[in-house]
Amino acid sequence: MECRRSWRWFFSAGFLIMEVFALRKTQAVHHRHELQSTTVGTIHSVLELSAITLIDDVEVASYNKGQKQITIKIPWIPKVLGENYLTQSHNSLVKHEQDFLWPIQFLAQHDINHDRNHTVQLLAECEVYNDITVKSHIHLIWNGEESYRLDEEVGHWENINPEVKQYPYILQSPLWTNLTKYYMKVYCVDLMRKIVGYSSLKENVAPEVAVSQHVSPEGSIILSCIATGFYPRSIIMHWEKNGKLGIWGNESSSGTLPNMDSTFYLKVTLELPPEDSGAGYACVVEHSELKSPAMYSVPRKPTMNKPWILVLGIILAVILLLSCAGVFIKWKMRKTVSM
Image (cartoon, rainbow, N blue to C red; front, side, top):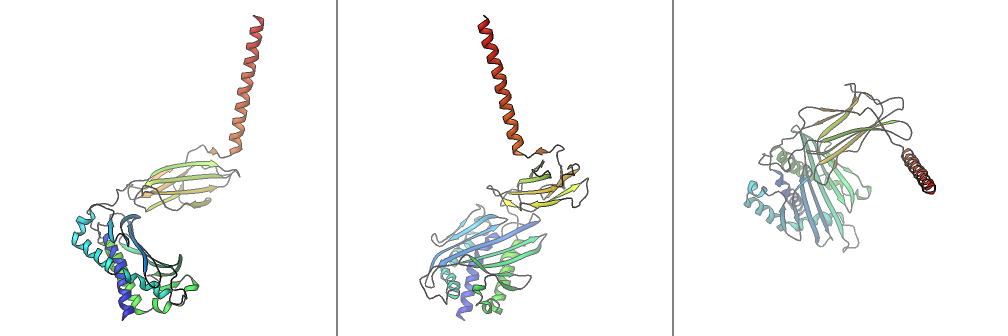
């Protein structure tokens, strides 16, 4: 009974802060919902406890054991949720802080040193695409290493760290399974679908795109397409030749990365063989802020990407300049002598 109560409060306290996400309608095609919580302590007490919630990689709210308060990052959230709701959430988190101690006591039960500090991190995330759930994961991280991962589609916990393999009977128990399914559905997926659109967490921004090509030292043609400053995160970029899809070389991608201003960046490249001039290629970009797929043609003339050529050019220019200066000085001296 005590185990059941502790796990229930652990999930309640952890996912309670995720309810802050119930704020606006799903306007973009893709949305991501995430909770990150970190607990540091011994088997006797919780030393540090923090949690943050994010939607589409924008921090919405946070909680810290030292401050003992929920910090709202978006000014209009209290008006939307109501002061009573936020007060109840705050009181519940403060009251049940010690319930976050139970996972440490459970995972460290065989540790001889009872004063040793341990860290438990819980990462819960779900994603929807066109209102369809495409991802629902929970990650349990013990002392800096991921130990277990739950994929809701697979339906069972995967043991990532063999050193922490003595606890699957708890994770696979009906109690834990039902709790995880319930809370992920109610506090992650369902709230994602109920976002009501009172305001946007961040204004949507179309990508700025730049396309270039250069010749590598090996002689191959490198096409680069960079999109930056866009929001939301979801974007599709691919190469076409004369308006057609195909495979003409080696493609690579940087992956979608965050900028400092909470917008995003993506670079895709295409390496072509030396015999391919790069003519007719275009980078096609699809984003929710673009009315239709945008096509960006590759410049015709490639840039020589050979540092030694640039250095040689500079040296030759300097030699030419010095030669001209020497000729001028000699001419000036002869003219002076003749006078």
